[in-house]
Image 1 (spheres, helix red, strand yellow):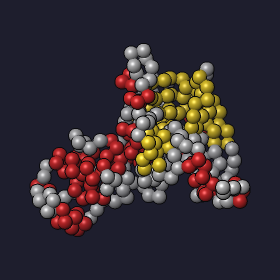
Image 2 (image 1 turned 60 degrees about the horizontal axis):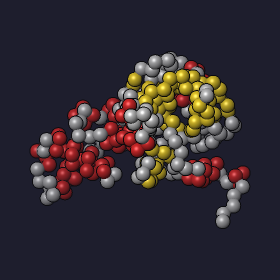
Image 3 (image 1 turned 135 degrees about the vertical axis):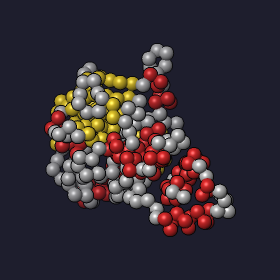
Image 4 (image 1 turned 90 degrees about the vertical axis):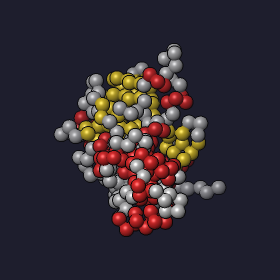
Length: 289
């Protein structure tokens, strides 16, 4: 068995071991606003519930391991002392992942991920309309656990308003876990889903995707493509060029000879099939053909 003294290895390596060993972890999809009222949305898997009377949630936006900077969420809760914690189910997992890209300060991740801003009842940050459970919170305390890269910052939140989609409740008002269909985080690019096991989503941290707000209108408003599909398509740095598209379509000609004259709906269905296998590049080339 490998035995390790945490002080003897790089923080980045230790970070990876911890995320793989302590898993799966629930996801706090945290919505905040900055001092100027600009919306921010970001997921955190250092998260759990720590009491019900009063109802307390704790999540931790850690200092970035790579450069010891702090996240916009932490700045925002320090300034406003309010946050909405939204649950993440499978239907929105790709959009949630896209929102974790390192967008510049002031960029609205609701718009980039294609998720809907819903006005809260008590606090100022917006709720995620697509989330099956939304918890408006006041921040009771913020505890810094260190000053170096990888150090946590415990944000202790008290839930002041709870919202839950009635479609996930039974006749007695209890949650049907299978209908809630939450996802959880594991190490590397792995997530897990109730009753379905592990699956992977490429981590978006190395690049910044174009965002759902920058998708062509016919794709953004598609009646075929799901939110997860849009999240995958929007998590690219740039679209394929004309020559790439033409070459791909020519190679595709034997299997789909009418692809150039196909309707938007037909192309969207075909692209969706490629997306189901994780082939985002081919899906884009079909959509742009």
